[in-house]
Each structure stands twice: as structure tokens, then as C-alpha cells.
Image (cartoon, rainbow, N blue to C red; front, side, top):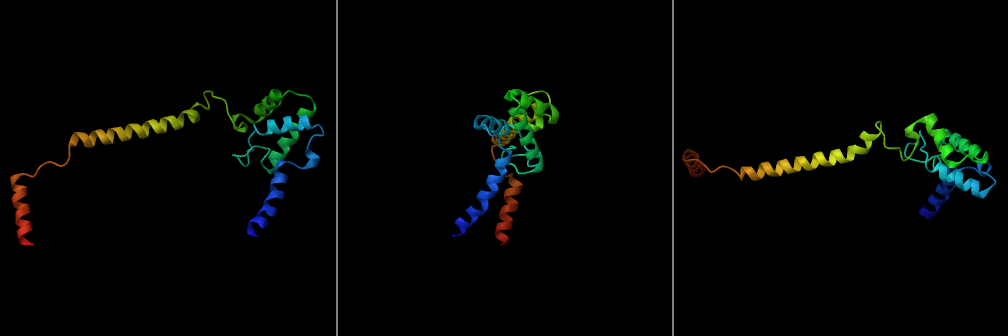
Length: 150
């Protein structure tokens, strides 16, 4: 019962995120191309959603812009290039590899490498030590004295 109620509340919200029927292009092929382009562009408000999945006002405006350009006959690459030129690399869900984004692409590799190196050095250090040093005669005598006192 709760699942059905939850689904009834969730489904209309998802339908709105994709776009209102009035916003969609009348040509199904052009609409499909516009949706494909929209899945490549990031909503800058939601950040981890495409503009097709977001209901933010900015995403809605970008969807309209994409559909206007598709309806005008612009190729998909030109539509993406125009929005990319206006908003920068952040608007792309798959940003290009360049000198600005290279640290972001390299960061996971660097973190894993540093963690691996730290583990290697810790294991090497513990292997070199070989455990605790044996007790000296004075330490053994003190330990024996402590054991006898208790």
C-alpha cells in the first residue's frame, strides 16, 4: 500500500523533470535528438543531473535553448559547443581532458598511488623491525621481581 502511494507521488514528479509536453518538439526524431543532447549537459544547480533529469529553472531554460537550436536545424555538436562556450567545461557531464581538468582526472590515480605507497612503506617498516627487541638481563630481573611481588 505504501509503495503504491509512493509510486503515485513519485511518477508525476519524474514526468515533470523530463519536460512538459508543451516544451517538447513536435517532430519525434528532433525531440529524441534534443533529449540526447540534454543528457550530455549538466544542470548547474543540481550538479549531478543532466538538464533532462532536472526540474531546476536553469535546466528548463537550457532545455528550451537546446530545443530551439535543434528546431533551427543546428547539428548536435554545434548545440553542445554553443552551450559549452557560454557556460564552460562544468556544463558538460563528461568534461574534456585539458590542462584545467587534468588534476581532476588525475586525482583518483594519485590518491590510490599515495595510499598504496603508504601501505607498502608501513609493511616494509614492520618487516624490517622484526618484532620487539629481546629483554635485557636488567629488564628480566625487574620483570621477575614484579611477578614475585604480585
